[in-house]
Length: 199
Image (cartoon, rainbow, N blue to C red; front, side, top):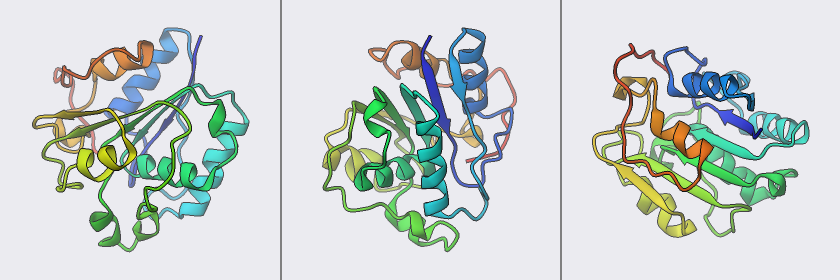
């Protein structure tokens, strides 16, 4: 059994059609320990509040694997930059579609999440997955985040923000990675189920 922490993004109220909800259900069905919390005030979040929630969940652990999407991917970078307690117990992290500094600063609700200087070492093996046409990171997440941090990056063609609007409800590849870190992100979503909104 592996313990997972799944972290959502801005304006995400954990809709059932989102791949993170699907992932939490699949991992739970397989007998793993899964925490998929609703972070406070997802429409108007406070960085320190979300960092406090992250610290609380890590302390309640152990948490072995973290899967963070969108705003929470940048949240994880803030946690690493600050040396948040509990990070050293995590064995691997997946950062999915982090938004760019420019996008975050253009929205007052999330401007405080603008990424820190990427001059730190991440505490555990970390992988980056992003779309090559992400409207929230037009500069390219691999260039903005992957290269400075030395992260292995999978850039998926036509995947947008890897959210329900891009068809990412069921997403078998992310489940495969959760079960086996050597698994690749060559497959897209399973489009047979209707998508729901949420970043």
